Image (cartoon, rainbow, N blue to C red; front, side, top):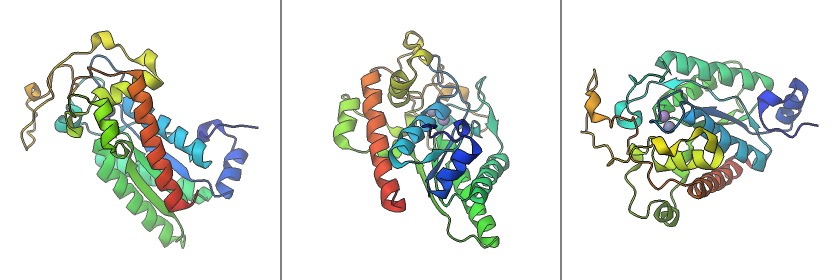
Length: 258
Ligand code: ZN
Ligand code: MN
């Protein structure tokens, strides 16, 4: 009766039936973080959720609601935590949130769980959440839970696709914050949340090999983007989404037999 793969849109009974059938559960973990003048604040939540929804459709999975807040934006990966609108969690709270969510879905019977990062700074804390959830489960005698953890952008690794997206050369994944990758995906999925007329063209940010606290704000390009969104198109976004989803579907099938 309900074709949604989003847990939040299911009744408890529909959800339970899918879990009992062995569905893979996907937990996107995002952030509320500035993404320049031309993108909204919840890019890191919208994009991994959309990726998870596509994957879940392909493997009959369930998408658990995204963790909407992430670990503190770091200057060399997200511009810096001091921008207005960026709302971040302390590490322990993020780890605890992930641990709690995992404990609950394991209690419901989930045994195949994929955590999908939408925000680079979350990654080590997601791993810690998995580790603690595993320890919790095993201490209760539940030993058959398997977890996968990934960042969806790591699946954009085909040199031919990268050449199509970046004919002038890749500025570097480390400066892809609010650049062509995220902007093209947003243009494809949520065009009404992008205002390219406000995008600022600038050379990719160049950071030294260390961080400073308090940060030297002048190291971050003023708009908060780390590379220019110039050249972003909805067509590129469609290609990025397809490439990432196809790659992740393949490894989910390989590991979970979904
Ligand atoms: Zn982002
Ligand atoms: Mn981010």
